[in-house]
Length: 299
Length: 274
Image 1 (cartoon, chains in turn red, purple):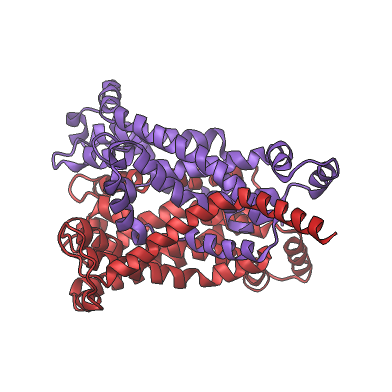
Image 2 (cartoon, each protein chain N blue to C red):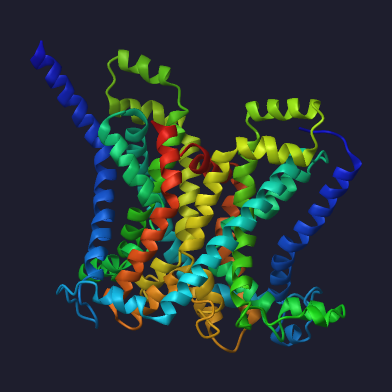
């Protein structure tokens, strides 16, 4: 009896292996590369040939002593705050408005319109917005001058103090649709609809309902949107690369771009690996709440 | 939640106008510019069409980007297909085998899902360079496959969750093996899920830039890298640049417009259940 059970267990394990093994191999390679990068960051690799001699925290110390690193940290924090908060709040307001609105066809139209940039690459949006922003011949300044609003013209991404905010605006433009989509779906649960009905009968205002009924009950949806935006804002590279390449000066430089330049242009591979580890650590920390939430819902 | 209200309708109309302006203006100007000559562009009437539309801009741009579109198509299609196979199998494991190892795998997959590419970029370059894979599409295909399997697995797992168990149980009683059940019953029932996952992976790979920039060679250059070259020069040929961008964006946009339902379901599956 017991041998039959164990042979059946073995057959079941063999079946499970067919399903799990390819995924497992991919994960082993992925986390192997992660470990490899971790080791590289404490190696002494500079120049084009690999050098795995242990160098301790030498390159981390060098990194921390670079002004550029701290400028990047400041910029990445700006991306995290301004790329995530306005997008989430705007997304929530738009999703709520779409649910309330009673004009037919509006919902489908708006949703398609704000979602299409989600299918485009950062390189394409960057290309478009570079030209919108271009200071002397660009679209925005030309239009502003044409209607006599010269006072509102700006240097946009060529202006040292405000360049980064114009870059972040591109990101908000591109991600707003996804935020609306996810938040709208979480607004549509039956329980929430009932609670809103009840609050409406009690005479609560629409804004009141949004703040005290809806927001506390779609925390899951908000957490997902925030995590998605956090991670996308943190690893931002393409927009910066194509629009400003970190300029003017270092004004819009971010960790991801510094990592790329240090590794592939300056051949300070250990420094590049250290920067990669910093980006990973930040991303990991940012997604802990989401991972716990997902794990609880899954198992 | 619907209630009739005039001030609310006014707010909706206002929002529609504002959002339309913000989201249509860039593509509108882009499309118009792509049909002008450089001389017409310098007249700075960006909201108005120039003379006769210069469709030859598109012929020129297509000539520039076509080889890279072939490369990107080969890479993105292969990665999509392989991700669906591996992700389908892995997703089934995550959704049906409630073992401790499945839980561990799930945590690893969740971390991998959000892994910034920067942290594996250097080893990836080392491997691709050392194995000579850089000279063929295989280098980029394998890289993207490794990076997209976690996403495909989670998405497929969420779609498998919604396949009713009764279907499988009755097949099991009939003596079918797990693999037969997976291929003949569960995968068939989850075909729309495969479509959603496939579209998401394809768009992701088509639009990816960092890995493509570091790994692509003249033989394997992808569209995004090519676009930066078209933009790259200081003599900004805005008409060609915009035409090239529009041509390359057409592929993912087609998926979005024609199969938008699956695209949206994919995003929601990844977001709400995962």
